[in-house]
Length: 264
Length: 264
Figure 1: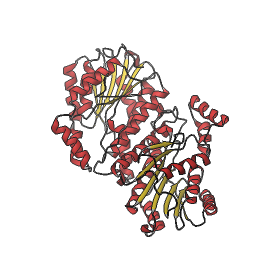
Figure 2: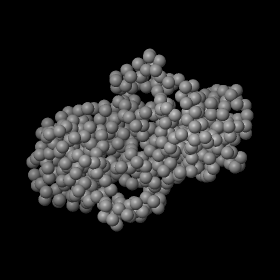
Figure 3: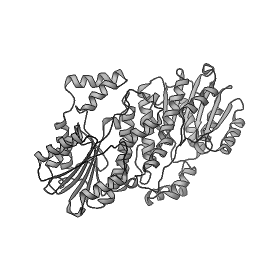
Figure 4: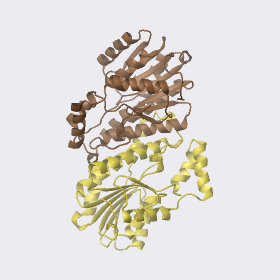
């Protein structure tokens, strides 16, 4: 459970990060690992082996005492038994760890060239939700089977879009809203878990570039173009440092959300 | 767009109601039709032909000037082109109608014998979301292709669970949260639409009986058992009358939510 003056960083930690080959996933993986005690293990999942290797090299430079395990995986096709096998093999005897963490970072914008009045493609829906919701619930389920007691933290990378609709970002808003409700319900059901929905702000990553290129709504396009040209996008080091600090302080209600712009 | 002193009831109306063979769907279909002008058309969708026939008979008694069209359909397997065909055939020349309404009532509890920490069945997820989200977005899409201008109203039957997690009702909470975000985004994108997320309160229907029988959390079970034994569940006529009144007054922001217990 989160709480003030708690011990979080500096322990022997088992950690999984999804979408760890770039952007927020990579940045979190490196900075989290920097704060782990020796004999910690971090498992990185993503589609790009080259990206994972680069993240691995950054972690090795930041904290050579952390063991890094890479798995190339397409979370559009989540496989619960594969999750179980990966976690069980990487963790070994779970009692060696004082803290176990999952960072649910992988996610997609969805087809933002489509408006919500055009959402009649059921196969696209299933593909989108498989990555953005089902892979998250399945990975959490398998993680909690193996780490079934002790200090466990689930970090969900969410967005302002989980609570505020944005034109042309229907898939994204719906995916983030559903994912956040999953973690709110999980927190309600299991008070022994420490669950943080962290909204990183509009971070300057490839997702913003993709969004500007493909979004159908001119309003939404202009909003992000302005942020980009005005330099008001949040940088990766800033949002990562904030998340590290939020987790250190632990002053949030489990299942609640903390935004980059919130005072903590 | 909703607004005070608007004309809503008493017009030549085209209306579709999903899950119209029982419970809230049936009650809404009958009371809505009672308020339609002659030459109105109401299309009822559900899995049970016998249930649809009974709803048809109630509408015929309430307002014999309304044409009723029944379609047996399983919304766990939504079919966009079938939606299109049904609406196009039932509507004919759309200009004959002054108002077009969809009541998205069909939905399911999901597997409430499962906790959120056990959600690793991807086929079950897809089945659940096909009914509770994808059928809704696909039906709306096809409806808006055919009724592409004029006074159009979308009523989404939502729940307190869309905004408040409840133990053992993970699927239901996530389904309702995702569905409500869909309508919030649609309202943001198209201000010409009139969108009401109506939360009917804990209504005394078969769903509550199913819930009490199957829910895994003892807390949630006791909560609903108490409501049932204390007589604090809302009755179908009460919540239906409230919805009729909410739509008459139209004092809500399109895309917003109105709860049975709200003052209007």
